[in-house]
Length: 330
Image (cartoon, rainbow, N blue to C red; front, top):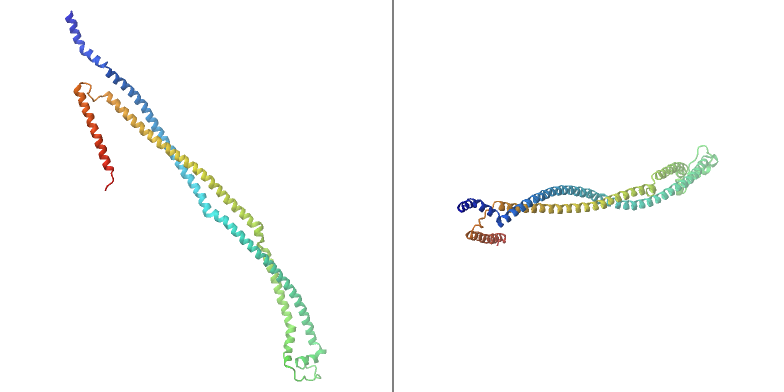
């Protein structure tokens, strides 16, 4: 009986031994860590998907913010360039035009006074020429009067046929040799002068009428004030748009800047999530498929120690070579 019991114990010993190894604290710890990292990887996979979705959403927001900033900046530049190319010049031109109109209105006032003086002088001259014409008519009548034949013969030195009894005048002074032509001019010229003064008076009156019709004094009273108001309103509208555009551009710039910062953070968060899940996934694979056999004996521990030492030697060497590559070329 004792032998049979011992045999049974020997037959069950491999299974028992496997069961005992499975229940070792190390294996229990490894199993617990595997379960922990499996659950952790599931959570981190969700975080990774979340980070990816967040990064994609932030990228969409960034594109919208960038588009809004570009359009806002374009609208701002349109009004700013319009003000620089037209608005400022328009307002300054209104001041210059106002100065010119003031000067021209002064000239126009002087012209009105001068034209009034011309018309008045023409009227006075016409009245005088009318008197001269009347005197010429009386002079003409006197020269043709038969009672004045003797005087005419004496003045002109010519003897009329119907006055044969009038003696021929003797030698006359040199100052009287052109008396006949002078009398002729005194009789005929006033009529021509009256015609000329009529034309002058009519022309001067017409000029006054034209000047009155084209009087520029109305420019400073109604026309220019309306234009200046419209120009000022236009420039005010442009400046209002520039101010509003500057505010919107600043806001759009801030929103785009915040979007870039958020997108940068999202990119690093996605990168960190990938690194984290890769690390934990590697740990999980290591725990599930342990390539290390250091738990078997003392010699195996020495092998692991040597491998660790090799790694410790390789890392400084790699660092040293990378440092040399970054050194400036002499």
